[in-house]
Length: 319
Image 1 (spheres, rainbow, N blue to C red):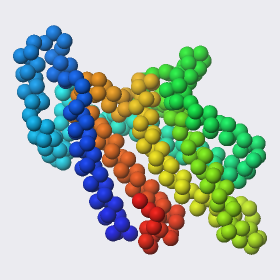
Image 2 (cartoon, rainbow, N blue to C red; image 1 turned 90 degrees about the vertical axis):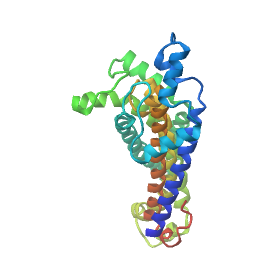
Image 3 (cartoon, rainbow, N blue to C red; image 1 turned 135 degrees about the vertical axis):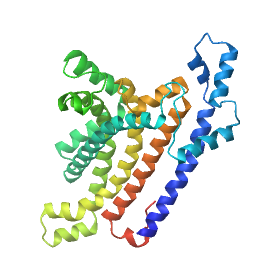
């Protein structure tokens, strides 16, 4: 296990280093010039040139990358070119707010998706299964921005029950905090739980037809014990995979949701950084998402080992 963790951590480090090069290269070719954003539309060419020199934008790209990467390794993510604030605390604040949104959404996606998938798989062909299939089809068919707009029009515009935009910290009151999370969380959950439910249903049906499940039934075990002790554990393994993938989709969905609901999280910060070509903020934000996704894959692999002890010897099938 120690050797496996060492190899996986080495892969994560390599992935982050490779992605840092890609991220830096992509941000350098974005159209526009941050100097014009800082100086304003009426700035003279001399003023633009002075700002570019001060920010080091005229240096060769490799020098800019080494300067940025060296500082990042020391924990210094730079200073926002537009807001003149340290990037580290700026990204940390936005990440904290996004973590609340993503954490609640991910837990609900996992819980609802697994429960619906298990019940549908156990009672395949029943009324619950048919209703669940229709709901999951509709969920997959509707884009997240459409779900968000419908929820805002219904629960904020028509009924007036929930705020349409903004964010309130939990220190401002739990109910107020929850009221600002409900619509963004609902948008993410509706758009993602169908992936988990569909795979869990298919995996459950396949597992219930396996020989070891039939043997457990032949021994006289109750259906409840057959499902909970023998079928569910193995049926969850593919679901762990799709949950990891959904975490990546969730991070992408947050960008859309935070924009629609004016939620001041990491997604909205990245959109603002792109619009203003604030390279340090954009680079740090995307790198943060990369790190989160890399460690999410590691957690998924560890879950594989916990769910299927056979993988602990040779790690067969583990990425």
